[in-house]
Image 1 (tube, rainbow, N blue to C red):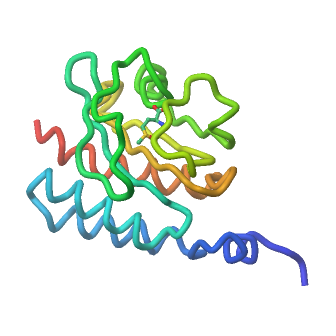
Image 2 (image 1 turned 90 degrees about the vertical axis):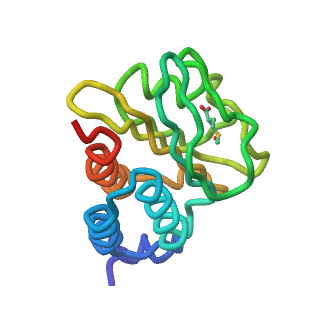
Length: 166
Ligand code: SME
């Protein structure tokens, strides 16, 4: 039997149905009017349903700084990140998702935990305006693939209007 993407997802300990996780988050976003609670729910669902996601958090852009909002995982020393620093700063400046397979090989990386091996940062945007970002660390090297990028970019799109109800 060929080693298809379903087997690969199982081998990594991930549920093979990111669409189900996305549907769960979309439902939660629709049902929750409070932005802070919507962010907390999103973080809870991702942390619970995606086993490779060791640290899940949301940063909100305030002026030239990213300010840590709801998160699950070990407390991070990086509660405020200037736009010029870190992988988080780079993703907000470049207005695009950044995937880092090996954080220790990336000079931009600001360490949160010694166990972290890989990271994905997904901007939360309305049009070209960055509101914040979803930041996820994994203790596994190269934990984030195209499925994760698609899932998290969709999640960010569901969250964005909650943070900017204009
Ligand atoms: N690693 C991030 C900092 C945030 S912690 O991972 C929670 C960065 O390099 O910007």
